[in-house]
Image (cartoon, rainbow, N blue to C red):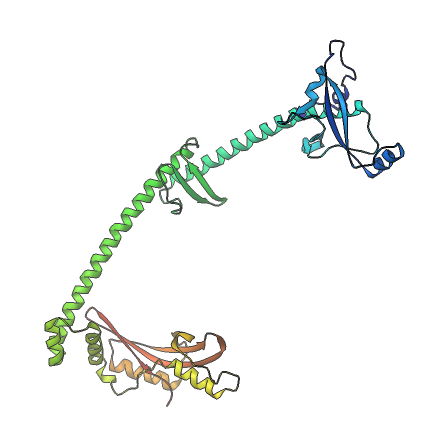
Length: 375
């Protein structure tokens, strides 16, 4: 670095050892330094106290006051801490400790150390200011690149938490989240919050319109189902159901059950699949000798999984084919179920098989599952 190379060791040593004739005023300051173990031994041999931390009062002439710092309490100290050192490729480094000596130093040696710190401190801060300016410039370039990419791509969005505003927003990038502020950023970064807010408001508007359309479709579908159910009850319903339908008190679930019975009337003699997992697990635990015999099993204690079967036995395939022949417009699949006790996954029942039959009747999708277990 230019700042470092301009300061040579020879220049650092070129410190006057005596005050000029005009320097008649002096200031008494404290010089604090450290002694190594060897230095503590030497101190004791010379009649000193042998302590690691040494404090010495020295007289500093007026023309050397640049080597002194005075804190807010009016305490004057020689500039020995922190230390500033030349460290090769690392430039000037700061050491937050007083200098350590292997023998009690002379006063002039302390002055030379203070002079070194004084000169290198200014170069150290100049380096840091330069590095800070470079980091700021690099950060602005990075933010400008992110901003250009964001502004050029209409599909990009700021994070919705926190909500984008015309002044501030948060953008997710490959390098992490980047905060943009229109008051502190420069163009084009300062343009990102306003555009992010505009896109956010646009998305809300589109979402609201979509929700209104979906709601309208749902209401229309509901009205269609009500109309179809009323017409179906008028033709196929019992007298009691027709009377309750006319009074507007017939439950829609009862209508769906009646429609399902009618649609699958050709399968009325077949046994329905019973969701009796709790009873099955209870019976299994009752027959086991593992401490679960007295356990009461509720539906909420179970985890039930189901999927379409990938393979079938001959009897299952025959059953599927028979039902498809009776109901050619229906969707018929073989389902396999497994029931597990949540608190003890070792307790399982299954696989259990059922035939799920699904058929469309008007706006309704009717379904019913029949037992596919081998008798």
